[in-house]
Image 1 (cartoon, rainbow, N blue to C red):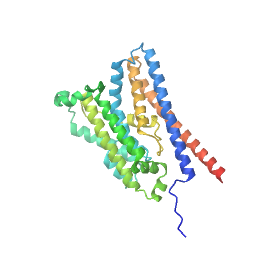
Image 2: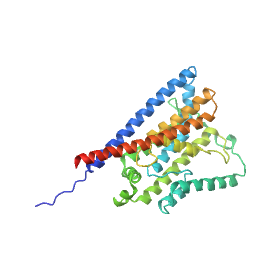
Image 3: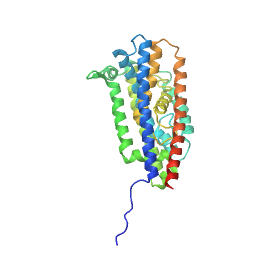
Image 4: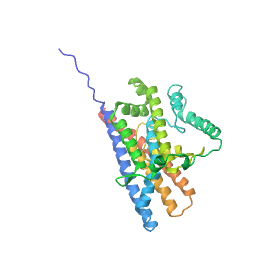
Length: 310
């Protein structure tokens, strides 16, 4: 007699949950694309045909680049059910090994590093004259008529997207975010993976800082203040669950594009910039509420399916 061969297929409930979760993501991505199309057309009509001009679309793509590339790295952290408000490797050590809540440690290091930054800079400013001309030209160069800065974002997005969707590391990050305790029981090195996610997010944020410097050409201790919150907003608005375990970098990029669209439209329509913060906050609340609703609906559907099998 031969020994029975253990099946490596996932349990039916797990497979069903994965399929339903993927369907929810696909629906949200299509919804984001439809919303962007409607918003672009609406803003173009309100602006008298100014919004969808080649020049404004160029500016929109460049405006989106830094936040979108930072959001790409932030996805790695948020899918593990963590958050990074100051983007650094030391945060990963504290969260992964000291088990300090990520919101607390990253908020603390945000103010510590910002204070050190001010003390180090002494109010000095780096101007375009202090930077290489070739570096500054990154914001104006094109390849086949397409601006270079967004190409860096697309490259990072594709690399991270493929790693999350097709590699063992990506599957383990999603598993950690879905159920950290089950991930430990499954043999996943949770601490190492969480640390790796924070380190990768910090490295990608460094690239975002380089692109930011190339675009603006003037830097001081206040440069980039608030961009970490913009990246988190883009990730959540783009459909990455703040509770971890689901979402894609492509959705985060769409979220960054949506926020940049609103900013650009308000400038063109000469509307008070205060409304940008109000609209972004409203979108963030809607996205979090939608995440909670979809998670509850998915759990109910899985319970129903399990009950039918019994």
